[in-house]
Amino acid sequence: MTIQRVSTGIPGMDKILNGGFPKRNVVLLSGGPGTGKTIFAQQFLYGGLKKGEPGIYVALEEHPVQVRLNMAQFGWEVRHYEEKGKFAIVDAFTAGIGEAAKRERYVVRAVDDFPSIVDTIRAAVKDTGAERAVIDSVTTLYITKPAAARGMVMQLKRVLSGLGCTSILVSQVSVTERGFGGPGVEHAADGIIRLDLDEIAGSLYRSLIVWKMRGTSHSMRRHPFEITDEGIVVYSEKTLSLGRFGVEEGSVESVE
Image 1 (cartoon, helix red, strand yellow):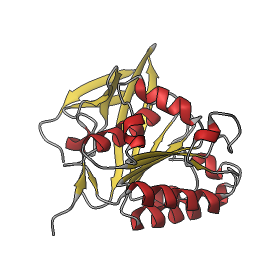
Image 2 (cartoon, rainbow, N blue to C red):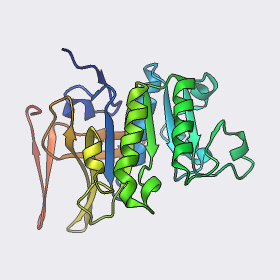
Image 3 (cartoon, one colour):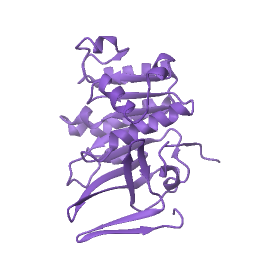
């Protein structure tokens, strides 16, 4: 049976995944501050819009107006797609407070009301016919009740996958944390991609590694990436080894 794949829209990333995300997968995008998680997720959504695949963005940590401005900085203008009903931002940040927030179509009135968030996500997906979804960040939903983390991710997975979405759940970790953000969430997700920003000998290095991805083989190596004026570029042909005394770069001939 041929696996249906969804292109990430990020140069170099599809090669690491042997063609892209398996369709309907729920991927945990984990990393510390400044690693590029939000840019990666927004680039994934915009790549879908350009291919005619509608999407939704659930904003839990940023005002929807700021989300649009941030995307526009990379040339990802989404207003046109919103007007056509192909893209929607779910405002789970403002609780409807403020003049700008009153103009948003999908607003979660109580940001600590998880069932309300799920219902609003479901409505936005159905209205837009979304094939891609991003929740930024899922950590916000359970940061005050970590024991509920796995259950929340499982419920989101059931809803998003059931509606046909391929999804990214942005997950925050501290700089020194080795996990993926929340107890048990790594078992609930279909895939895990870890983004890192490491300081070695006075310089910062960006890299990512695919920890797991159900439904496909993938590179088992750490790859460097950059954030450019047009978004993220992953160097699939290069590897990065972070050691105690420095950084070693290598190259690969093929993805395992």
